[in-house]
Amino acid sequence: MNRSTVVLSLFVSVAFLGACQASPTPAPVSGAASSAAGSAPASVPSGAVQESAPAGLPGTLSVLTFEPGKAITLLRRGQSVSFGAAGNGDMLPVPSPDGRHLALVRSPDPGVVAPGDLVVVEAGGQRHVLARQVIGGGGNAPAWTPDGKAVVHGGVRYDVSGGGHAGAGLTGNPAYLTYSVGGATLAYATSSNSIIVAPAGGGAKRVVDISKLAECSLRAACPFAVQAVSDDGRYVALGSGNTDPSNVTEAHLVLDTSSGKPVDLAAFGDVQHIWFTASGGAIVHTARDLRVVDAAWHVTGTFPAPGNGKLFYTA
Image (cartoon, rainbow, N blue to C red):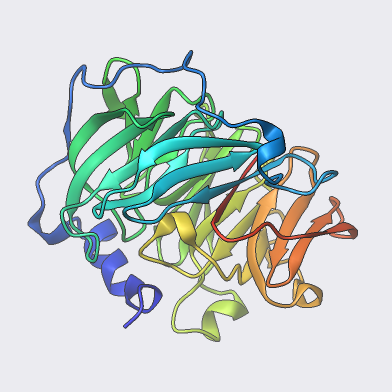
């Protein structure tokens, strides 16, 4: 059984019932993490590596290479940043907005949803534990705040500098938390048919019910895993639930929350991922290429997709 086919039972048991395999409440590690905001990334000359994204693509695509026992590298703007070697228990890696840090969950058993350590890795490989006994999987993964000063996991905000922690102001048991590329808006799932969209700095939350969408009646479950949200909160890209929320693929729909209707993606074929740009358009990652669309969803450019590795988009 693959990871995506078991997500519903994991999501219900982990995200909603809070059973989490009878795991204890996450234990923050006070003062264990030090800020590395001024650390320079370990890099190689730009001429020695390939560009991580084609020239002319709006924003920046980073390619993360992550395989147990091998070097963790982030390729961005022609520079390769190393984060040391990946351990067998490392999972759910997410780079910080500036590409100088990596957040991940260190699990004793990466094959199941089990409590582990929330870890920040600096460029060069130095590690700091932010919290222990956090759940990695079932919709839970580290999410960097737009300013790169904290990591949100399981509804708790952990400061990278000093190790302080506090509630992130999210509703219920949030899953698939995603910030917009400009940092103005966040979105997350609270159930398999309910999405919340809210200002990242606090404010009124909008509950988006996706249960009545035709897409939900055609599948065993609604595509409730949030891939991306636009800065103005109008559009939310949703994919199939996956036990690795940092690698959600199959963006079945983009919901226009102003009309409650999905955007027609039929012309794009097999859509893997969608990111919304700061200019109001989007980048659509299909099985073949990357397509840039404007605010009216007209294709304005087509580019070859980068090679193997997880893709992350920043402005």
